Image 1: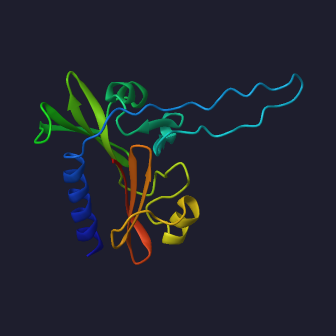
Image 2: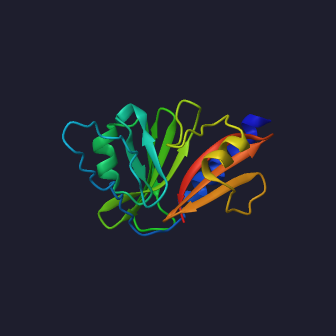
Image 3: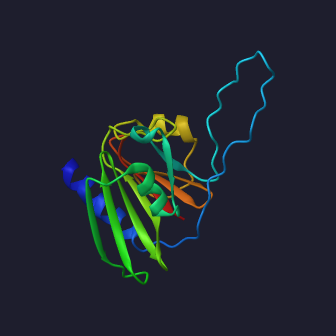
Length: 181
């Protein structure tokens, strides 16, 4: 039953991601922090204008919605699998790149492809805030606060041009997806 629900939600998420629209978002690096000579700098995590997914296996490379996919491919390398199909929402091809633990779908815009969704597929990857498939709804709320969404069985958050959705079953996260708002 859980597998059927997860597969259904995954298929729905992918279908919805192929019809989402949005503008290009840029990542904002943290401001430089000059450190006086002789003292060690305090390490600060980077801040972003929207929710991002950091790929631990690629030195925590941050992937964001509406990012140019050519940049992502340069950082992550070749995907384990690749699929493309004519876009029903845009002119060109929608593309799907499957990596270990996550799937990235893109949307075409002229001669470029932009990240349209990021779906975490198993507990081998986490959000930068430490939430993973299998986390409790309390873990999600502790990391992100009360949800801003209205979907039953989901916790939904919006930051910048990104929706971050956690689908729950029996109080546990069964799906995590980043989508364009």
